[in-house]
Length: 268
Picture 1 (cartoon, one colour):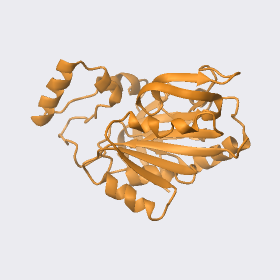
Picture 2 (tube, one colour):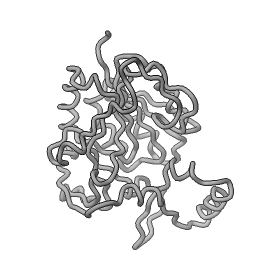
Picture 3 (cartoon, helix red, strand yellow):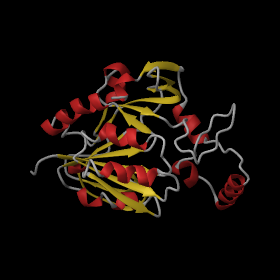
Picture 4 (cartoon, one colour):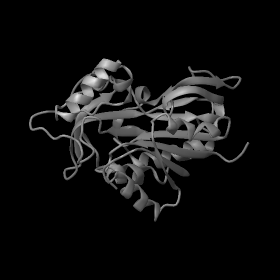
């Protein structure tokens, strides 16, 4: 089989505040980083393209719909490739990723279809003090996306975004159950695969900042669950400047105790 590679697929929309950190933290983990920009209207495109000058492994695509991000990675099905899905609100520990890369390239997880890492869903971040407050996974679910595409022959059908939905055709010996739940086996501070999830933190100057309100951007899961009437109402509210919260994120990412963690390793 060919030499193993790690391909990043980064789906973004208006991520100007943290996109540089997001990409810099994964650039030595990935052999190639595909950035799928879903029509950002802030400085996200300019900041990604500026990073390309120093890192030619970053490939920028401007897409009109989130589902197009999956089309960019279909060709890797059946190849000796790990696909690493990242959002614009996900900061990974680059020191940990260095260790994980070594393990992946050695083939330590070749019998796994998916690896689920540790997560801190942050509600507050203090970059000066290098600390963050939030909710850990576990007990929250892990939303990390690291898939072994050598385990599948195809990922077809409609996908709402990369690595979501569609029909997976597994190779002999593999199935959906071949997952390594690292976040259940290893503590946050000891994990080589951990994410600082900024899901409750504004990521663009385009977002509304309302005093005393926790701004929670709706994600694709929220929008897909809405009917036509709900979407129309949401659009009107947006035009009127009404802050809309994400019940899906609250339900999934606000479980257990509110804790404070050291994030110094996320800030190289």
